[in-house]
Length: 389
Ligand SMILES: Cc1ncc(COP(=O)(O)O)c(C=O)c1O
Image 1: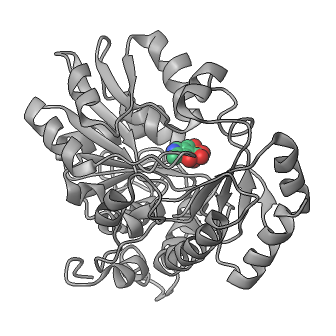
Image 2: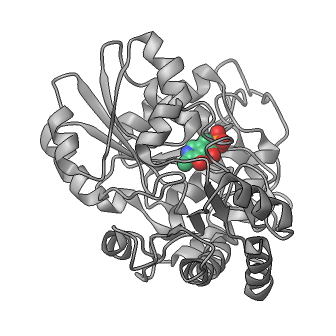
């Protein structure tokens, strides 16, 4: 399929999903094979061993490359495997500037594993460009930002940071998990690499773990393919197929979930039992204007995602909320068709030191909602019931 001339929704369905040439199967085949027949020593048919490459994985990588407007994608067995592979492109002594409230698992990996191996991480409030500028030194090789962040929904201006990085010859990677390629395309804003936990919106059904890196930089792509093959943290052919199946409905799911979230955020914001509602689509969000400008559907409409964080008066009220809600399931993760609720302080961010959490405003009374695609009336009624004391 000639990629560029088609719109996002069409590419999501067709790129990587071309009918099987041999049988005509419309659904992409799953190549459950670890190895491949060779016609002679060194004469393979483009595939030799599935850690290196696999046809189903190649189809998935092609699909996500297209959705992020990249030139190559490298798929991994989880979001953390993708992030780790990215950091493995760096050398001992290199410095990385990283958003101060990245996902707790990223924090754990960089502070407890990679820092022991000679990489230096500076946690910075990347909302403020001058904070990044101040930390740049000759050893700085990468700026890694998450926008919006998990779960405080702080935004970083991707275009502004990309300009700064280009001037200083530093790579910029954006963890785009919270927006998905439908809601934000960082390569178009100047980033060098995009990371996704495809476990979230890309998978969309809470049934598969995955991660992916997308870039337009051939040298970085070839380094990452090498790490993918060498480290072997690759997704199984079946997982690749599930993800390929899921991106077909990415636009529909993200659009509907974001619409639901905006309506719920407005309701929560006006609710007397809620102390604070954090949602980039609300005018009260301090970076609403940036969200409006930066977070856009492929057709250019502003979109604010489907994560809402709220704070309640006390831990007891949070427990009451969790026990009364029946539509929102208490579980980690986000971005699925089903609505989930979690308490990041004790769940996703359990490994972040208490002082660090408090300094960022991540308190035990904060609840994160991942809004799904259920009927809005049921979601509203459920929240109303959960907020009753
Ligand atoms: C923003 C963000 N980045 C990365 C990850 C890690 O992804 P995975 O759980 O697929 O390893 C997560 C997981 O929750 C996340 O929310």
